[in-house]
Image (cartoon, rainbow, N blue to C red; front, side, top):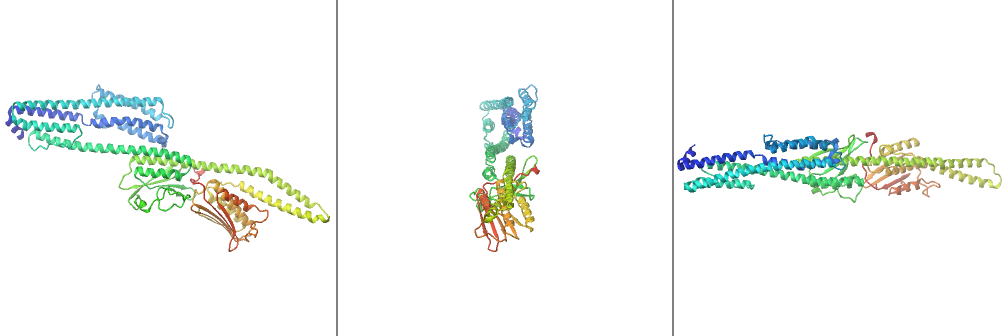
Length: 619
């Protein structure tokens, strides 16, 4: 009151008029400012609803986005419901039911709840977008545009009214000051001009201008209020701008990551190669999201533990690596030390690789502990885990089908041999037996006996080879893996030998394809058959190991060893083993051991990488 009395005493009634004008102007300004408070946020939210509608349309049409029985789409619809009913939007809607903005908002909510939302939920994934759904979305976006337009017009009208009031007050003050009091120019007009400049600067998003009044009258207090208001507006605008920038960057990252996942999905399903198909994509995703390293562990159904399948960064070549010409995952020790880990201030995210009924593995993602993993990045990684699960499941199905097809083909060949050649050889053996019973006298008797012996030996060898061939063709790799099949084979030949056959198996899981596994098993069986039948061995050892990138198989015995001519007459087992080794793209070495006996060594490089075979019992 002291400042008011001083001002009234100085300029009398005229100053009172000016004060009254200023008070009315200030009150009106505050009232209009409060009436449009939050309109900017409401306009931004209403505008974002347009982009959100098209995003929902894209999610409804994309089967990868609608995993887990549509839970992703439902969660997006619920978030859209929350944004449509946001408090900032509702506060900007007038209470009057007849107001155009109220009617627009009511129609918008009715269109969303009564039509578009249900059409989005019922839209089939993976197919073309229905024309009705597209038309409904376009109509809905048009309603949003109408509401935003009305809201902008209403806000601009309030701002225009505010400008009119300020101009009127300034004009009246200038007339009074110029006509009556020179002091009025210094104490009233100049502060008003300053405040108007601040208001205009705020309208142009310039919050640096300050009044910095030092007096005690009403205008000085108004200047302080303006300074405080512009300071708060500057903070709010900076926060909104920063948040918008962050959201924009996240959207850009999401767009790039989705493109990357799309390309990676085609690569995974096209070449059936988990390593070369996934590592480049994972490394690009690490660079995009600022995460890594990423490791994939697959569940080994035979030993109840996880087995590392791929990694995006390692100092030493992984033990399971079969391609020494590939350096995709190798990094320098300096680069590796800079990456997040348990020992270098890193945090770990574990995502399950699973189908609807089976857990296939785990995706391990490391990221810096001082940087929280955004919701967008987490969603992208969940999409990645779903893609990997699908690729792994399909590859296991293909592997199982290949095994079944191979077994069926060999069974057909075995039946044909048994029904044709085996019966013919049996008939010839009976005819030779009949010839032996015939008495042939004279000097030709010894000659005929020698011929019959050779025929009998040849037929016996041919019949034995045929029986072994039938056993091979009827051999099914119906065990869970090669290790179990080899153990069964070792047990079989241990019974035939009368002593246990030792098996040393250190081959990593998923090293060989079904065809490579069956050829390896057949070579081992042939080697064991030779050792049991011909070598007169008392100790036999089978060793199967992986010396990256080669598979090494050895059959060692302590028998009598190979003859000087390296292979007995009419014995084709060693030739068959060599043919199988060439089929595997490797070589086989058969030689006498210095300590006695024979060592058969098979060495080859697997031709392709493979996922862990699918186990039907787990399906």
